[in-house]
Length: 243
Ligand SMILES: [Fe+2]
Image (cartoon, rainbow, N blue to C red):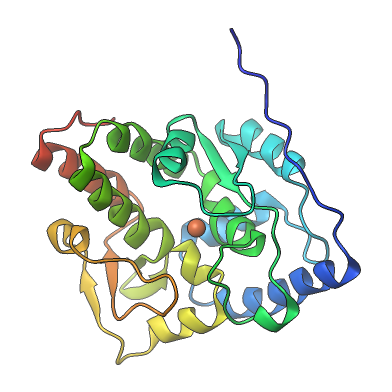
């Protein structure tokens, strides 16, 4: 049986919602221009977001499917349970919300909204290598025990959500949570904010911050480092090594 593509729902957005999107987009594109990693800067033009209008999930789902075989899933306006989240990834589906933050929340929203999802994450999914790597988190998580699942979720968090990366001797932003956040991006780049080389054991033991900025960040060596992290963690833990 072939799975039917999911139809994603779009609420009736108001002009104020579109304005929130365009205010966020304009401010953030200027901020990330010099500090985002190559993968993001190359992916964003391929994604073709409209700076002035909220994205239609079905259009972007189809666009990604044509480029890397990923589609978008419906996150139903709230955090998915972790297992559901990784089940989506295993099926090459990225869950997105259709919620857009309120105008007074431009600087910070604890609930991931669609600016975070589309602006922060989706450029990466236009890259075939990243697209394959992201999927690998799914089967690894689903094969893991409870302790390992928490640790794998943190590996995802400190790479794809809040990771930094070294490029040509400079520190750049890799994580979608930073790329889509005006305040935390600047906090992360401050010289006094602690940053460490990515150490799997240490990251696995570092809780994620949802309501505050993180105290410190971890640095990837290159975009393929995420894949090596997953494979190394699987070997350390005796789990099936994803390829
Ligand atoms: Fe995210």
